[in-house]
Amino acid sequence: MIARLCEEFNKIFDRSDEPRVYFAPGRVNLIGEHTDYNGGHVFPCALTLGTYAVVADRGDDKIRFYSMNFADMGVIETGISDLHPSEDDGWTDYPKGVIWAYEKRGLRLTHGMDILIWGNIPNGSGLSSSASLEVLTGLIIKDTFGFASISMTDIALIGQDAENNFNGCNCGIMDQFASAMGKKDHAIFLDTDTLRYEYAPVRLTHAQIIITNSNVKHSLVDSAYNDRRRDSERALKILQEICPIQTLGDLTEEGFENAKAALSDPILCKRAKHAVYENQRTIRAKNALLNNDIPLFGSLMNASHISLRDDYEVSCPEVDHLVELAWNTPGVLGSRITGGGFGGCTVSIVENDAVEKFQEDLRRAYHERFGLTAGFYLAAIDDGARRLDRSEQTKKEHRHVV
Ligand code: GLA
Image 1: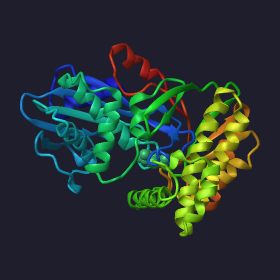
Image 2 (image 1 turned 90 degrees about the vertical axis):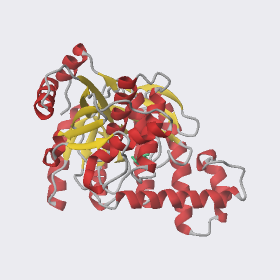
Image 3 (image 1 turned 135 degrees about the vertical axis):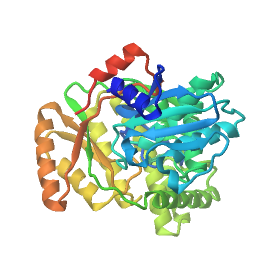
């Protein structure tokens, strides 16, 4: 595949030099949803699915972008100092936002580039195709212009800045952090308040992590997401009048129960409850994984789904159905919606010998009920974003996801 991307690069941009190749993964979050802008914990893994870039420098100040996923949009050109979001430029607002965020930090590009993109994360699936594109661009710029002071954590923060302030989605840090900082066969336990993190090995000898794509994309995702964030912030303000807290993540369940009477609006009360309980569940889930207590881990995933469905209200009937089908399938240890919500994917832990039946049953029952075809991926956990040298390019050709 990578050789094909390089060929395509030379064809599209009419070049014959040796380009550089980069990769940034998508992510699946095991637990800890809508906690990353509430000062809580998250527990994502970087995936072998992700976004690739083939890049070569230009002598002028133009950046030419081409995505094989949006081939009908053709080559899109921008000047390195002419950066503003534009609906006509579609997907390039993500990389443009990253260049803009670098410039904001006084780090200017000194020449242009040709960039070809190809990704295998299904768009709108909640597996962070846009964050992977932001992190990928952040890495290309660091590498190309020798910005040695920029760490991989900075690349995640730059990607988040681009998403928040150039693209208008007020997301937290989880997706960009997971894409930048992933580690093969490990989940990242991240405290989003301090950005302290620890890697937890994912060694499920008798089970697999299966991602199920509902193939439902909700168009209002960004505005509904920003609404949830606003609800959480309003709830925090009210609780701060009676508790010495900086974030909802500072509260334990008991602390919340003692303070919740201050939240007279039942919607705000439900939103805050989710943020507090989900954070505590995530801490418990990390310990369960370290103790190899997968049944406990699974039951925390199930409780996470119920809270996201009923209190945070970010699920939808199609995803609820997939999760309920999973709960009723023998050999499933846990299942929940993953990512921002309003469609997208579920994540389930399924015993090895139940995997086939799980896929068959869910595919059939989901199709019967909604007329939609579910997609399945065995989650293979990869390292974070990196430049691919020749040997890694070959290795990546041979790793694959179902
Ligand atoms: C989206 C956002 C993340 C996070 C999740 C929900 O993926 O980009 O920052 O808030 O939703 O957990």
